[in-house]
Length: 549
Image 1 (cartoon, rainbow, N blue to C red):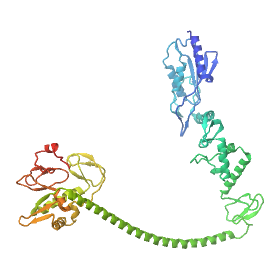
Image 2 (image 1 turned 180 degrees about the vertical axis):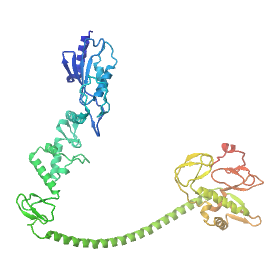
Image 3 (image 1 turned 90 degrees about the vertical axis):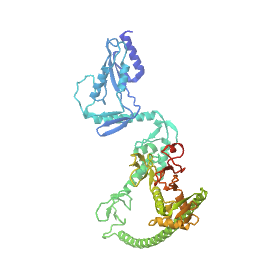
Image 4 (image 1 turned 90 degrees about the horizontal axis):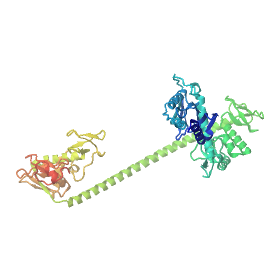
C-alpha cells in the first residue's frame, strides 16, 4: 500500500473510534483529535493551598499533520495543546513522542494517543514555579502561573457540570420510595448530594411546612443528614407560588423573632426596630404607634416599667421560695443519703463476711476430703531439728506464696515486684516473658503459712501440732516426734519432706520449688524426691521421673 492509502485508512479508523472528537482541518493531511482521559479513580487537583476531588477533565487536543514520507520513512508532525498542562509538561510530552520507537511502514497516531493518556496520574498540581528551559514551538496553550486560579475554578465547574450530566443520563434509585427513575426526573440537593424523586420531596416538604418547620429546620430527609435545603431547591420542589410565598413569609417572621432588636407592634403587628438605649420607647414605622417595648402598652414616662417592677418582685419571691425549698431538700437528701450509705455499707460487710465464710468452709471441706483420699504417710522428726525443719518448710511456702515464677531455662524461682513483663534470669542469663499478671496469693489451708502467725510462726505451729493428738506422737525417751498426714498441718509437713535414702544418714530434706533433684544437706547424697531413690546425674529424669513437678 502507498503512503496515501495508509494515511486514508488511519483517518477512517480514527474517525470511527473518536467520532465527534475527530475533526479534519485541511484536506486529508491535517486533523485534530480531542483526547478524553479515562479517570478510573477520583482525581486530586491541587492549587496553592486548595485541593479538590474531581472525576472529569477537559479533553486534550492533538493536531496531526501528514507529509509525503509518512509512514514509510518518518512519523507525522504533531502539535499538543492543553490549557491546564504547563508549558514544561507539554515540552516533556513532545520529547516523549519524539523518542517513541517509530516502526517504518506502520502508522503510529493511535499509539501516541495511548501514550498521552498515560500522562495523567491520580494527582494534578497547578504549579506557580516557572523553570527556564529550551522553548519548543509545538507546546501551545500551556498555562501561565498568573492564570492558575482561573484554571482551577474552570476545572471545578467543568467537573460539576459533567457529573450533573452523567447523573441525569443514568437511572437512579430514589432514597425514599426506592423507585428506579431517570436522573433528569430527580432533584439532587446541592449541599449533601443526596437525591430523591420530585413527588417524594414534594410530599416531604409540604408535610414539614404543615408541621411548622421551615428555614433552618427544613433539613434533608436522609437519616442523620443535617444539611439545610436551599431556598431555590424548595421552590423547585414544591412548584406552588402561594405555598412558596407562605414559606418565605414564615421564614422571614421566624428570623425576625430570633433577633433581639426586633419587636412586633401591638396595633398593626408589623416588625419594629428598637435601639439599645435605656429608655423603653418604641415607634412603629407603619402606623406610628408609640408604645413601651417592655409591656407593649402606650408609652409611659416612669423610670421603671410597671411590668418590669412586677416581674422583679415575683422573681425575688420565687428566688426566696426556691432557696428555702432547696435547703430543705438538700438537708433531707443528705440525711437520706447518709442512712442509705450506712445501711448499704452494713449490708455489704455482712454479705462479704458471709461469702468469705462460705468460701472458707467450702475450701476446708474440699481440703478435708482430699486429705482422707491421700495415701497414709508419716515421718519421724528429731526434736532437736524440729525448729530448723519447720523453718525450712515455711521458707519454701513463703517463696511459693510470693509473686514468683520459675525460669523456663534453669527453673530457679524469680520474683516480680514491678515493671513490664520482660524478665531476665540473673542465674542463667535467660530472657523470658512473665506469663500471668497475678499478684501474691493467700496461703491455703493445707500449708503451714495458714496456721502460723506473723510474729511467732514456729511456736504457733508447734502448739498446733501438740493439739493434734492423732497426728503427733511424742516419744520422750528417743526425743522424736512422729507426724502423719491425717491433719492439715501434718499433711503440709509430710508432703514437703523426704528422708535421705542413704541408710547411714536418713536425714529429712525439704523440697524447695519445683526441682525433684534433692541433695542431702548432711551426706550430699543425690536422690529423686518423687520416687525417693538415689540417682547419679540427670539420666534418671530423662527415663523415669520428671525433674520439675
